[in-house]
Length: 613
Image 1: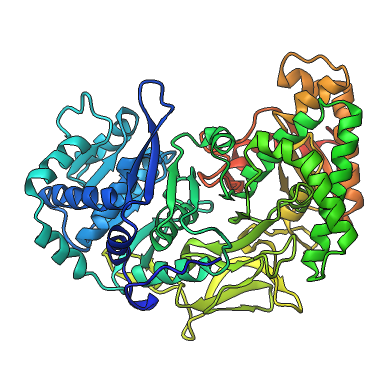
Image 2: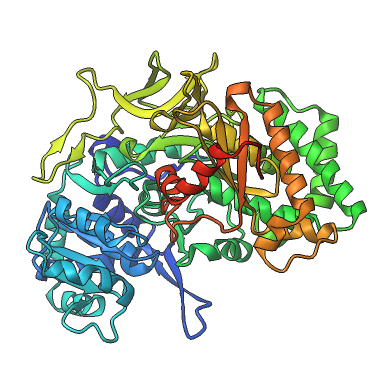
């Protein structure tokens, strides 16, 4: 049920401040923003939409007193906390451009963004962030002049968020606040989002109010939710998906945002809140599926059989819906009974019992993960988009979906597939260009407005888009064959023991792989078979585990063509993540980093005379 809330202007003329003004006036008592605080960090504090606008007005005056001007970039490095969310909106009301930087960024990445954006002010979380930002204040090549610190019992020479707010209390003038935001136009820049840098330095993607509002309005038409639904906000605000889902779409819908400051605690938050909607990048859905599988592996055989039978009914029902067919009455009745008796009690324990909209994006979703959740009556509406397209380009929706595809284009967006398979797109939600160091913007589209996405895919006869891989990540073997590493990796990851994988073979005659044991399912699998292994290394070295991994690779190879098959591999025990550098903050694989980190090991695989494990 897309929002029926009144829009204060046509969508292509709207700005974010106009939406906040409407929310405060027409939905002022509704909850807008909640976060945990208190001595034990468990109590929820909530602001209404009227509260939010009052605080934003005060903060805008406070930041204006620091010299923030219309059109200038202000950098933010904070977690999902109220200071971040409210500061972002306060800057927008001043006509400034908030730019969130990933909290896991290395000092050299921070320095690049600070210089490239020409920002004079950065708002950071605490001591950990100060250590990376303070050296830039004395760097003659960086325009940065001032830091504001959110957690600041001993902020030293820097301003604090509390002092900015306190100053705003004294300086706020309602007429000045109203005048400032009304000067904003839909074509003005709303934010700059820096890409996560999988292949090089981050690029600054400038997005306007019009880009974002049209994205929110059109996405809303595909999101079948109750009015004012809660959103569990846990992904970084430097990620375009969370900016849309955690800031912009809630403003359009006057919805309720629940901030989850610790992304590793999202499963616990879901168990507590029982949300009606949930978005997760593929790795999040993989981890959740692994947790459920680990629990299932410890259940009595009779209960597992009952669950598997219910899963089969759910998947059969999903198949009819996927094909646009009416679900047979007998199947619907059997599914409803199995759902109530078998699935719902378990879904309730996980907090997943109220879900009506679930989605994923940013990378191809492994089909076995999609099918796994379909077996629980949860249809993940996979979508596809880029930072450069203000978020989603294509989306599956309840009235039309194909499991494994990324859906059909949203309204106002066109797609075409080039001869080499690259996807091109154009439309009003496509950005105007990349930010240049002098503040200008360089278009990345051709003369006809087509933007090359760098993704490879195909359109089927019904208009659904199927992703293959990233163009830059395609492996070209020494005999000239193109291989999609994501296809091979997702195939071998279908075995529960294998949590992560990287396939290598560019310029080589065959493929090799690095396989990472799943840290949750690995021990559970071993325990169910009476295998005692004190450490992950001992588990990986156990003969039964080595034999099972060998069978998993063999089974994957049987489904792949000869060029795509893995000839040699190594099993690793340390999970890859953003902190160790192998994943981006949005949990996408940094292939170059992994290849460099394990270069010697990869070379050794090509030097070995026999297949290794």
